[in-house]
Image (cartoon, rainbow, N blue to C red):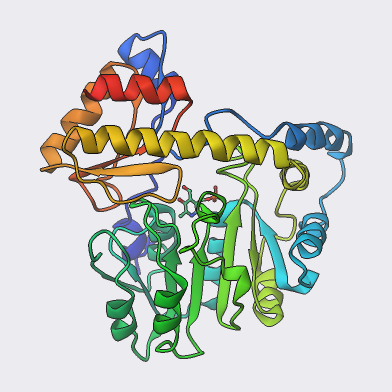
Length: 357
Ligand SMILES: Cc1ncc(COP(=O)(O)O)c(C=O)c1O
């Protein structure tokens, strides 16, 4: 038996976007902007920071496994604390789900080029990972339903989806759901929920709870807390109870939990971030379409730009880097011909469009 299992040996590690500092050094630039990782361009929520500062004095004590945040989420969403989990980002919870529920013979089913974080986590478990192609850059839920077999254990759906930015509607989901056996766990990843929630076509999964669906959300995006690592999930109490058995006992950290509680109260910051993003999406979408590009409609904080070839996408990424603009080439996702551009501040969006033009 080899020390490293073949499915780990062949795994491509998660490649995060490049950092501002790294690009500044490598290209000898003074000003670099990063519109590559779907982060909030105006920084972290101030109320989250206040709350973190207040929590610092208690760092000699172990945290309580996210209980305070779970209570606050249960109160705000009118569910029981037994229906809520908190973790080190939504990826932390994904990792717990994978450890808690997958057996060797199980299969994971999702779309092609799904969110890279999920791809890496699922493949690291060594189970069969199956995908169906996009239909016009949207999930093909009908095809996904047809692909369910006796081994399917987890179906992963991100709504809005990363990297396409597209959504599926409640009607589409309901039709799909009717074909999924109850023994299959559906992960509904709503990392970009806040950006999409005002679109009347977007289904907020908290309005339709099913026993085999777990909703995942995060403070990493609109609340500007990607570095704090704090996310949460809602599900049937039995699912949550089993996840809590497997979760790292002290996850999330004291500071991460404090950040989440502070952020939930920061309505002003949420509103400001959403307004900026809506302007950014409009501006970037119109500018790119004006240049003759066909881009999928985005309900998130980024747009995907499909290009003619891998070569073209690579070259464009490199040329923008040389001008101090970091975008995400989607090769690692499995879309080598495309790049993804997050919304920045108004000035950053202007800079990006000028550079592209
Ligand atoms: C669809 C999706 N889910 C989850 C995440 C990760 O969120 P977190 O920072 O909470 O782990 C991301 C981040 O890019 C994402 O795009």
